[in-house]
Image: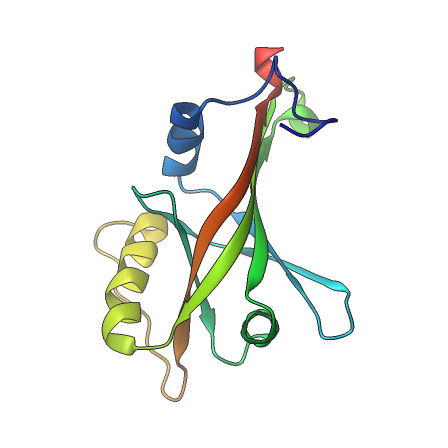
Length: 151
């Protein structure tokens, strides 16, 4: 655990992180722009049983250009009830190596799982002519996760 927000007292266990990720939440994906600045936007994700995280990006997205140049990213999944009067905040931050998959035969079925996760079991994969997607396979190298309700 790093110093600061996450402590030995409030650290989430791997099982707690898995349960946290199992709920459909918005994440924030951070990549590095060509000039060195951080590019940060919200994304949907899939958490795989093997610990990898999947994010899908249109091939025109800046994140994808950043990842083709430098295949590393940080993904933050968080929940903070404090602004709404609650006292709890939880988060998991993943520093990752990234592998890009462009093959629609692999991307489309996984992307369909993502759409159904967030929009329901009957949701269909949206298709826009001329738009293609890449699957970003994030392999966590460092995980920092905390739950303020723990201490």
